[in-house]
Amino acid sequence: MQAYCLKCRTMREMRNPQPVTLKNGRPAVKGTCPVCGTVMYRIGKS
Image 1: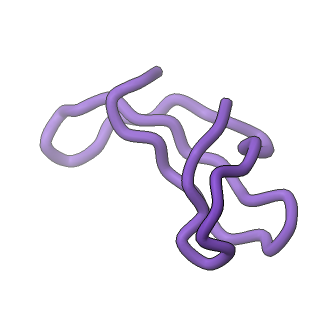
Image 2: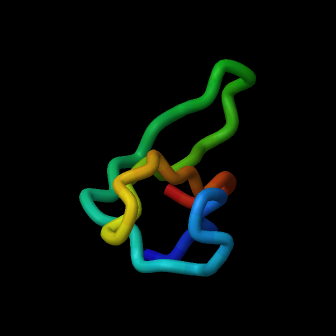
């Protein structure tokens, strides 16, 4: 799954995507950037 990396400022393929639920109840996917290792979120897809 692709997500936007805020550190690299590009769309990257997410490493280790895991479905999570945010505090407000919205579904999201959490993973890491394969280049810089920053935590990435994709809101609205699970």
